[in-house]
Amino acid sequence: MPTGPVLAFHMSMNVHNISSARAHPTATWQRVFEKLDRKGPSLNIQIRRSIVYAIETGLLKSGDRLPSSRQLSNLLSIARNTVTAAYQMLIDEGVLVSRERSGIFVADRPVIMRRSVGERQPDSGWSARFAARPSDLRHFNKPRDWLSYPHPFLYGQFDPTIFPINNWREAVRVTSSHQEICGWAGDLIDDDDPDLVEQLCVHVLPKRGIFARPEEVIITIGSQQALSMLVQLLCGPKTKVGVEDPGYPDMRNMVQLATGDYTLLTMDKDGVVPDDVFAGCDMAYLTPGHQCPTTAIAPLTRRKALLDHGVAHDVILIEDDYEADLLLENSNELACLKSLDTTGQVIYVGSFSKALAPGLRIGFIVAHSAVVEELRVLRRLLMRHPPTNNQRILGTFISLGHYQQHLQKTGLVLARRAGLIAQLLPKYLPQCSWRRDAGAKSFWIRLPEGCNSRVLESLAREQGVLVEAGDIFFANQEDGARFMRLGFTSIVESHIETGLAIIGHLIDQSRTPS
Image (cartoon, one colour):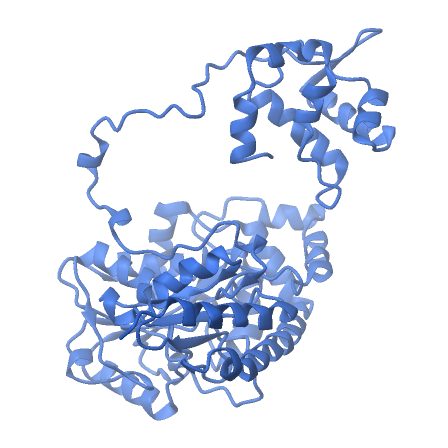
């Protein structure tokens, strides 16, 4: 469906052009189908979408006559059968009508009064009614069209070249039988798909050293919703929450909205330090697997110390293990906090977004059954439960062995990219220092004196290179002015060297004299 400038273009067509569709001049139909993409979805689907969109936006009106199938096939240089099939489906759906010896026309529809695209309703005092202003907080700002950039050094984004399309389609087919649909199509109220929960408990979590019962697991719309629900459930106005600095900005923002403040935990090269600041918190958010964004891996001694301090001072530990499944190097994975927990002090948050695709939006929480029980009620009030069809597809995908196969393949691809970047950084960014602990999907880079990562981010985008300025990860923006994160989950290997060369040149170009 056309969007953005295309939508504005369609809506700006004058009345003469719209009404002349009854005589179907070539110019009108070229505009209706100008976005036809032979590399996109099937032409049948694209034709139907284009016609429906033209009707919904007012480009075509009730009673307008469409070109004959022969005329449209000639205009678009496609098979006549494709046009005929598309027309017939729209007729069956009541969008079009066929009149004997007259042709095919847009069906009669209720008249809908529309405002012009550029017209906006006045604020009407809404700003003064907001109890909170999330827009005032600092957020990630990644371009929506990042996939069109040749050098997207972004973290955690989707790479279509390594997505397991055929295996995913098999899982979709398996779950689309009549029997399967009857299993997932109903309203589960506050429950989850039992197949996915079983796969988590039997195949996914044990590889992380976690052995959980179904009543200790709840499915979420990604780890983002998991963290949000935990903040809603556990944080009141006086709750003292410790967050990492630098750390995950969205968690910092959630806590600030809930409590009005947060506590910055003491950090060193191994992550969070279990000191008096830590002990004084009611709850602490931790990323010991790969600290966000420095990639630091907390050694086992540190993990045990955090857990011991948490138990001794009754600090709830939220462990965000966002990169657990994708191990890029052949190294022994350290035990996560939850696997060491014998008292229920740790609440574990995981996600399939980093391993499969962010758009899947499936995460999970592993916690004491009392916590999960309350989370289920809270989730029901928010949105009942995540889409069960997606849960069933993922559960089937795992049960068929496809998930483990995908992890192995993806791990090899990302390891090659990481190795190439590590090899090229001294050549193209010799003036920088960097860190990437084993298995991380990004590099944490410190820029030279006189270089600002926010300026560099802007200059690089103009050259087709996307990087992430590091200041967003710091509570004090100035503390991160010389840091940037360089991800490699979405950039193809052949584009890495050119992208690094551009970054290196821009660093030299953007430095201000000290």
